Length: 179
Length: 349
Image (tube, rainbow over the protein chains, first blue to last red):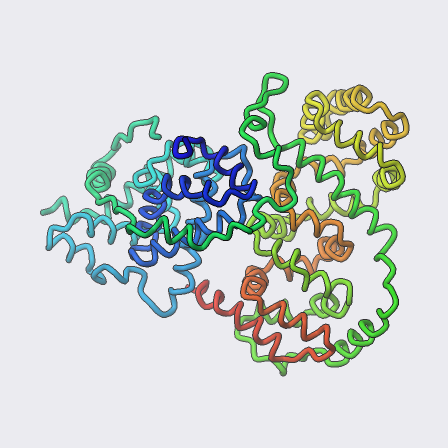
């Protein structure tokens, strides 16, 4: 059963030339990668382009994947890099939060009681490092250990940085508590 | 899969956790999967130069000595060969050029005479200006062999790989790696080992098999991680003696691993990661690439993110081709620079 095959088995089949073996991997991770890209970029179109582009790049570079590590960790890094490149290319000309009301975006979102937009607007006010940690934990739903592996830092460091990142997010969201 | 609970330690964090729990999870567009699959070519050689067996799940689950068998020993095997290749070319120099090379060299001389001056190219990013107008860069593109390397698909491919960029940047940031490469390339024992392997094909196969030996791998791991530890060194000597049957190879290998540079290089994680890229492995056998690593200014030049960006854009290749035809123009380099500046502007806050 292809869909139930472990990642490494599917990767091995791809490397033997079976391009169709990549499809279950795309199906498996499309949601989390798309959501992660969206939370990093704040724009659905960009998120789709970045997540799809990263998957294509991952396929093309599959021979450089180290099977000692999780496939998701590897492909997530590609998504993050692509997202950062996209953001960097766009920064001089276009605002990052193209889909969202420009600030006072938080206040506007709160006023319209659209909490989901409020969270996104708040996330986009955090540093890239904070946002990445929160995305990995709360949208990719990785464990501390998996985040540590993905980012190349110790699990203990993940915990402390995540705590600080959430504190900062909470402070950005503070007007909500005043309502 | 989450294996811990997120517990708020203060009101701010509690507020964030509540909001995150309620945040919307998007569903990807319906054509997301088909959009990806349409872009994949079934003819793509995604395997590169790898042995398919390395990627099999069975191999990944294999265990040796109570531990999970990793790709490390495979990397170490490749590393040994790559380092020895560098050593060989570093000592013997470039392979002799064949008939017809005079024309190429002539073109290079013309290029040198038409070297781009700072006034020819309007550069907005000082770092890129320094890179593309440095003596090191001109030296690089003036050498037909090196220019051929830069223009090669292997080089372009390797420079696009994150792990290779990471290695180059690490080499630029830290003298250790460069010293290890230089040290290994200049070590007499390493060179003697290379010469022996070159003339004894059975010995090369035996060395490869030794890297597949669990005890040998374990001893090598310990030795590279504890270079100054006498007991680790002794254990490695013992493992070599057990794994290698060829007396000549055994003697030479014992001498080579005694070189701290060679041992350190084998244990360098960035080096191992870069060696996962077949294009990089191919590059390692190029003397000009090895030279780039030992030239501080040049290493600095190619470790510039703008350089990678220029490679990615294909503009550097265009500049190199122009140089090869003896008609390097400011426009070609300017194109490379412009490509880099696309990133430059973005990097500036």
